[in-house]
Length: 208
Image (cartoon, rainbow, N blue to C red; front, side, top):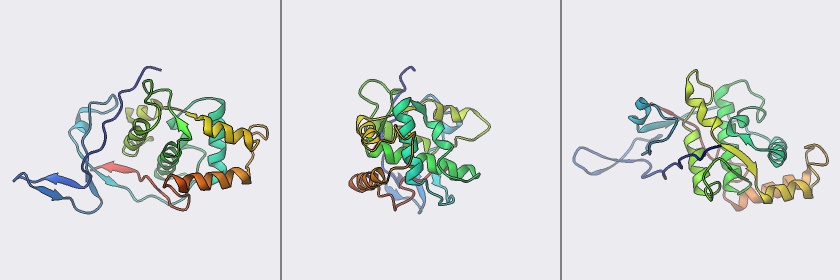
């Protein structure tokens, strides 16, 4: 897949300049963000800088399904869109969107997934996290072409994740749940500041 333009870092969350040029704190639950020219944004969206967080059902993915996702990512790469199904047993599309964003963000922060879609050296760290942050503002289930952004990011398990999957024999057991891997994931999430008990760690948002 051709390289994807990395997303610029988010700047000055929760602030904007007023008419006098003074820094002004935005109302709660509102943020102002700046964007570069990216391939999936329409002209009208590039003109919109404000986004609001969405309240969605708090049905979180279990460690068992996260393990199975990691197992699949050891076998082949999958698009980010594949995370919108199979994580939570809900029909609500926003709940599925939230689960996808949270799981992708959590695994990327913990260096358990990387993307071969991004240019060399940019498949991990800030670049993939910036892309996932952008997906938190792009509904994967609309009737327009915005969902292409979800198809534009392929994800693979890192060596750390592959070693764990092999160590706990998840591959040999065809993705069966491993209590040992459960414990290791708990520790990893805590170590990287995204404990499993906290959900979501990255909330989906909508343009106003």
